[in-house]
Length: 197
Image (cartoon, rainbow, N blue to C red; front, side, top):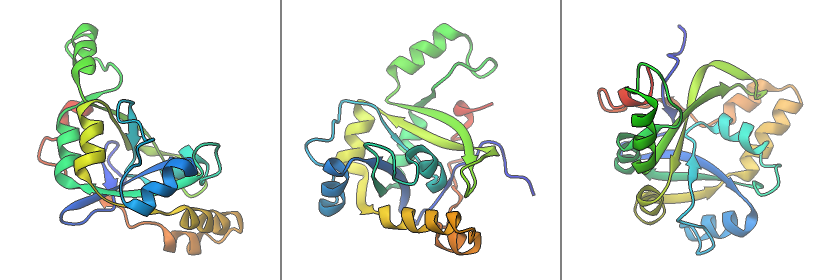
C-alpha cells in the first residue's frame, strides 16, 4: 500500500516523540551529557526538528557535514510536539489552503512554528514519493522546546556512522535492523489540516 503523501512518521511512546538534530560538538556533546541544551544554544534563533531519522541523515550527511558532526535524538513531550503543530504555519504559500498570500504572510509572521514537507529518503538518501515533516521552532516555541518539552537527549552519532557503514558495504538488511522504528504518528483528528492540502 502506498504511503500517504503527508504523514508524520516517528519513533514515539505514550508520552514522548523522538526528533533529530545535528550540531557541532561544542553544542551536541554537552547537550547529550547534561540532557539539556547548553547556554551556547541560541533560543532566539529558528531551530528545525525532524522526526525522520533518514531525513536527518540526508541533511547532515550521516554526521559528516561541518557543524553537524554530532547527531542527537531528542525525546520531547507529545503534548509539546502537538502544541507546536497546532500553532504552526506552512512555510510556503499554497493556493487553496491559504485565502491569499497576504493572509499567509501575516500567519507566518505571528506563528511560533512553521512546517515544511520535504521528500522522505531511503537508505541511499534518495528521495521517496511521500513527504517528511520538518518543524521549525522560533520565539515561544523554541524556548518551550529547550526548557519545557525536552525529556532526554542522546548522542546517536555512532549509530548513524554504523548504519552508513552497512549501507556503503551493501548490507541493507543490517542497516535496516538498526533504524529507529518509525510509525505513523497519531496526530489529533484534523490536527494537520492547516498544514497541507
